[in-house]
Image (cartoon, rainbow, N blue to C red; front, side, top):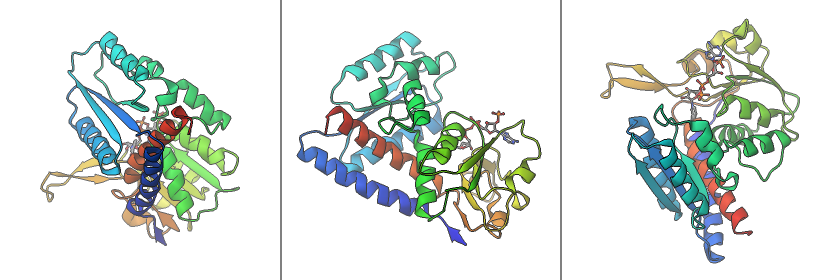
Length: 291
Ligand code: NDP
């Protein structure tokens, strides 16, 4: 049984990213990422903080634009337009979720697809499905694929069950697994799927992206399956100083007994997401600088 160490794999991705940044600097360009935060959501503040810190660690430029909750759609569109026009900025992301009065889909569509390092713009969604490598793939599923590869998992002809059909994780994950080269046979499950446990027992690879703490129990998993746990869920825990702990969508203590490889939470998929964001920003910079 192999515990797939996301921190280690992320560190090796970041080592390569750092080398690429150095090479770009030698060629006269410093990659720049703009992170736009609207409102006061505490989790979003933490995510934005860690993205900006990671840029600094790697020697990349970053610009944090924190806007008040009352920011209007028009004002936010103006900020995006300015960043689109700024040649020192190669990647733009607007931290999700924005306040409810903001039409998030319209904001995503306003980002120049060449700078859409989150990979949420319709043009990049299309490029993923078209298997056009010039597009940007959402960071979390891209990171999951790296973890699967790093563990030496054979995806060709394997049956992969992806639980969850969001645009951020489930759907792009399914596209990546079925793409030529990965060649898995993919089933996508969601809240209306019948007999989920039985379906999952036919899987060689399970990717759980549900948002339900420890939903995937041992009876979902056949012996020797590979389990990628995308979930990040807070559960109350009075024994912890913060009063909660983070668990995945997989009941790790049970599933670990049956599988051939598994990602832990924390320390699995989480560290990969930010590493792939950095990698996407470097890719955007290289494409825009024609290097
Ligand atoms: P969403 O809420 O957008 O999607 C959840 C999906 O799970 C939906 O497709 C939903 O089905 C499905 N679902 C819900 N309940 C069930 C059920 N009982 N049985 C089967 N399917 C079910 O979540 P995200 O995709 O954004 O995130 C999923 C998880 O991954 C969350 O825990 C999130 O915190 C985590 N995450 C982690 C990241 C990381 O960096 N590690 C990054 C992004 C997310 P339906 O479509 O029918 O509603």
